Image (tube, rainbow, N blue to C red; front, side):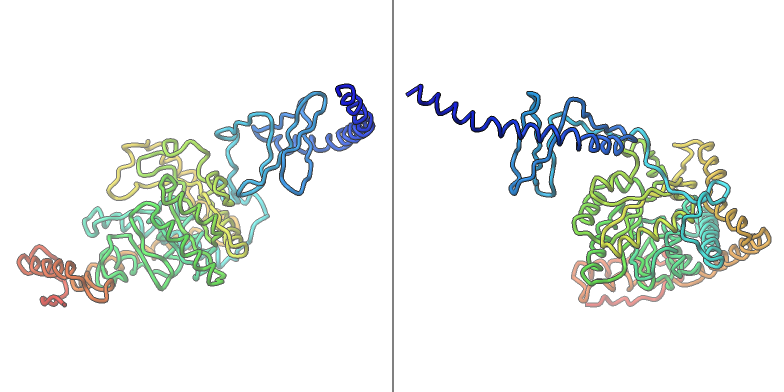
Length: 483
């Protein structure tokens, strides 16, 4: 019985031997003629980074099969695994060497820039703008800075209760808005007044909102600088950090469902990327493939917390890759670069129906708000250096002068006229009476609930009891609570 088994085994071996030799010969030919080119491609792909392909002593071959099954080939007594498994989410190749991904790359992600520090173009490969359009951008940037300066002084004088500026971030505000369309809904943080200014919000509109008078579009219901405008497609500011980002994703998804050619845009600071709202929102945006621009103003400081204490990774742009979102890093002090980056981002968002993350590297030159003193956590030398060498308004003005589109005389006239307009807007806003107390309790419910009716009655009783504690120009209100 044993001899019979051995005889049959020898027969099988004699049958397979020439076929095995043919297979070995074919594999050797494939290795010698095809693998060198593959190795060269791998070396070229990873030559610029930390992750290199370790191919010494290893040859990997892909074996196609109808079903994704493990295929193991024995070559030179070494086992090579060629499994390509179709995991949920995509195919994954296996390797026999443990691969530990680095926490960061040796070189930081490059930053897109067009104008150098002196306002001279470093390239000709960008979307050119007309003289009229460029001057409009600059005038809005100067208007924003002038308004911020005078409104801040008004707060120090006690005329308004609160304010924050966009000093150092004027290019981000105005140039990004210039690249958008009016039907693109904007979900701001609170340092994007320039977007609203570009869309048509007047200096008087800003003053009325900060003073909370009866001409305020929000009827005095919001604290200063919490602007909003249905007319200009600008959702009302909320103080809660990054709360607007999920809202923007929902709006973008709605635009997609409606087949619109618009995209939603949301602004936030680098501190906002440390919130759960940001991470949940960007993941939804990626999975749902929504037409959305996520614009991060990385100005280096989340109030008093520096970037180094926010995250260990290379800024914000790398976060996009982690969620499968295309990303752009741009010089936030270069208005031309901002305009071109947002223009391209919008094109991607609307034509490809997918989100784009923009990280604008800039610096918050002023205090976080009028309640902040930035000298307590950063040096004057640091702030002064950024103001002198990297100021976005100055750089854009130098470019206009480089193009012979601007001169000091026009500059002087512009600044003088803007100061007059802002001061007049403040003076008039102070004189306008406050909204009716009744407006506090309207526009939310069709029928006011009982608890709100009780609050309204209590407020009116309090004002009637101590009228001297409240502004004299309050409108007369209806002392009878509506049921």
